[in-house]
Image 1: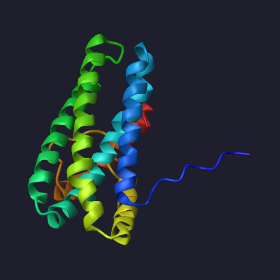
Image 2: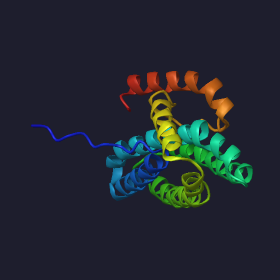
Image 3: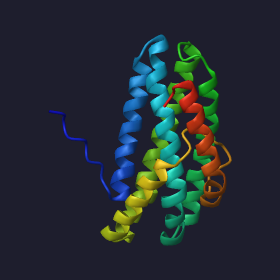
Image 4: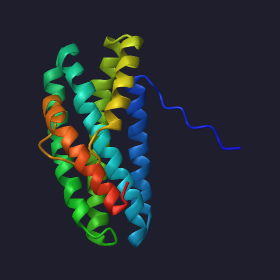
Length: 186
């Protein structure tokens, strides 16, 4: 008998924090792998980062801008970090996963992503958890899961706003998913 599927949290904050933990685990798995064995965990990491950031940009950041007293400043800083992360991730995709350059840059990238996640959790998620009802967080969580189902699977620097994601996102997602299917990198 198959093990029951892991239940993912529906509360948007719990859901995204659990993904932060998954991202950290994938960084460790990728960095602990040797040579070409880094490829599979890196592809999983890249995909999770892409859909995770898209979800934050479409669902969480717009709400934080409106609900938090310093929301615009907090979100602006996170969006700048996300833009930079997408550029680094795109560069990493072009490197040989077996190279020392890849490992070095991935370790630096991990440090930046972990710092970014900690800032989100402290400055955005914790405050939203206080400001929003559990029902609102549950609705946002359901919306986040839907957004991830159709989000791009690769980084797209310059597409960091809700509007940009809604305009360019579906086209980018379609191309990414077709590319993933052709190359076998899901």
